[in-house]
Amino acid sequence: MELKTKIHAEDGKQELTIEREFDLPVSLVFKAHTEPELIEQWMGNKVLKLEPKNHGSWIFETRNPEGIVLFRANGVFLNIIENEKFTRTFEMENTGFAVQLEFFEFQKISENQSKLKMHIIYKSTEQRDQILKMPFRQGINMAHNKLEEVLQN
Image (cartoon, rainbow, N blue to C red; front, side, top):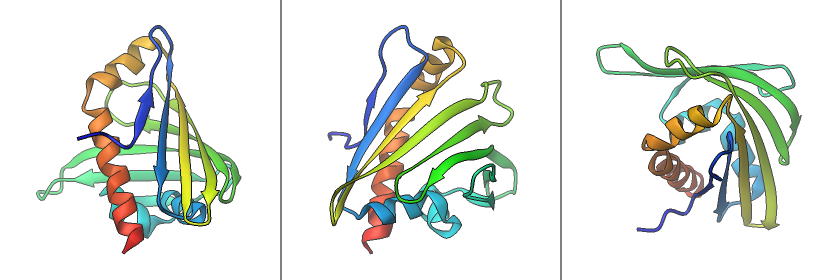
């Protein structure tokens, strides 16, 4: 099965680019990244805090049925232009990974089609390569498929 979300990672660089086209208006794809209820539906994380404004912070977490935290991430939003772009920091807590910088661009293709482009910069090439060894490609593709499913219903 072909993955609709494309990841481009050049050898020897500490960055990668993620691109995905959606059969959704750009405004909906933007909302899916900035509204807590939508984020929880497609990402499966609990949104503990979300302030989608310049210098606003965010915190997401996932717990198992026993209440133990399995995943927790946080960061800060920068340079938000509604339906066009935002930048955010991303830190996975308790993993040893350094904070990464993420640039999100939302592009209108047509009234009902859009493209999301993410450019992520890691502290080092080694950190980026370590992330890519995880089931990262499949995970982000599954999340984007769920995003499209949630917003089309």
